[in-house]
Structures are given as structure tokens and as C-alpha cells.
Length: 274
Image (cartoon, rainbow, N blue to C red; front, side):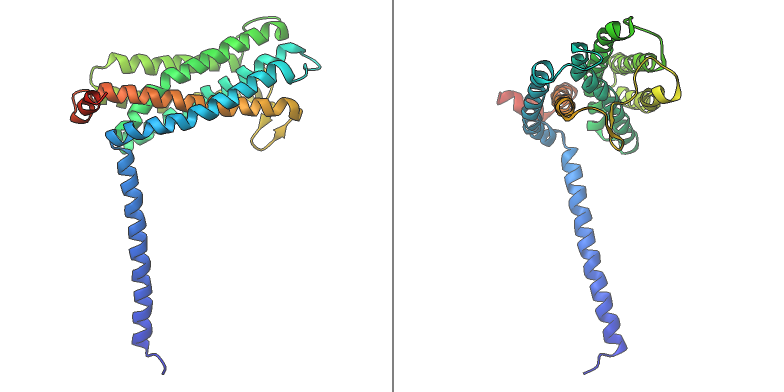
């Protein structure tokens, strides 16, 4: 029997309604997970497991990068053994840029959606990012003396990286100087967003200006000029340092969260249970 136009219309509407119900269910599930992630007790308990998942690959990758870079990788044909410090310098420099970019993204989330954990992330990530930036500057100076004949020059790459360190320190100082946690969080979020303009300047400084600093050895799309024996430990070091950044930041967030909500019932309950 042929279906009437009304039957066809009802069938199409029914299918559309089913799709709508499925879509609404999926949206509701995503929102529930998002709100659960924003819950302080849930994040505090779950972040302990996440930290372990980050700590294990961090230790393995960094150990492999250091041992391979210092022992098994052959000397560079131009720089000799001096180039080995790049297995610490390059991942540190990468994390200095990645950390501040992540803080800027968290700053947008904090200002637009007012998510408390985004503010806490900025406060916890700033000291870690500052440490990696300082390590990048120090190892770069150690590498630069035998390579360039000087520990420091005021070229674009080094100067902009030093400015990045000052931006990290500015976020740390701003967070500690404001008594209200929410006001401090919003101020740090704003500074993170404004300061992120320095990240592309650092990255493209060797392209835009003539500097002593060499260009990028490897990139996401441009391939690499390094031999595989030298490249794999460097990539492992970058991955390990990234996991280390996440591990340290997670523990910092846990400390910040406990201090910020030290008078709440859930914190008292966890302290009572050890």
C-alpha cells in the first residue's frame, strides 16, 4: 500500500525528532562531563591519577633522551660534543612557549566562562613555565659561548625569550600581590592573554630579523635536518619535558586548590581522612 503524503511527512518528522533527541542527549553528556571536570572535589581526586599517567612517560622519555644524548649520539661534525646540551635546551625552549600559550588559552576560558580551575591552572603553570624559560636561557648561554664566542647578545631571539621570563614572573607577582583569589585570577588571565603576543615574536624572530641564533632545526611541517640517531632522543626529550610540565602543573593546581578552598567541607573531609 502506498504511503500518503501525510504519512511520509510524519515519518520524516519522526526521524528528525529522533536525531534531535540523540543530539540533545550527546550535548547533555558533554555538558555533564564539563561541569564534573569543573568540580573541585572531582578534579582533586582525579588529578592524582592523571599525574601518575604523566609522571611515568616523563621519567622514561627524559631518561632515554639524556642517556642517548650524552652517551650514544655521535658528536656533531661542526660543534663536536657541545651540541649535546641542546637535548636540554630545545625541550626547555619549547616548553617556555607552550606553557605561556596554554596559560593564555586558560585565560580566555577564565574570563569568558569564569571557570575557577582555569584561573588555578594559570597560577600553577606560571612557576613551572618560568623555570623552563630560565633553563632555556641558561643552557642557551652555555651553548652560545663556545659556538658564538659570547654567553649573551641582545639579538631578537634572546631578548624576546628574556621578556617571556619577565612575563612569567609578572604573572607570579600579580597573583601573589592581590588578596582576592578571584580578582587575582582574572588579573593573571588578562596578563596571560596580553603577553601571548610575545610567543610568535620569539618563534619567528630568526626569520624576521638577522640574529646569531640558528634557525629551526625541525618543524611540524618542514621536516628535519638532523640524522635519525640525533633526532629521536630530541623528540623523546620534548615529549618527556611536556609530560613533566603537565605533572608539575597538576600538583601545583592541587596545592592551589587546597589553599583556595581550605575552609570548604570537602577539603576538611580529605584532611580528616589523611
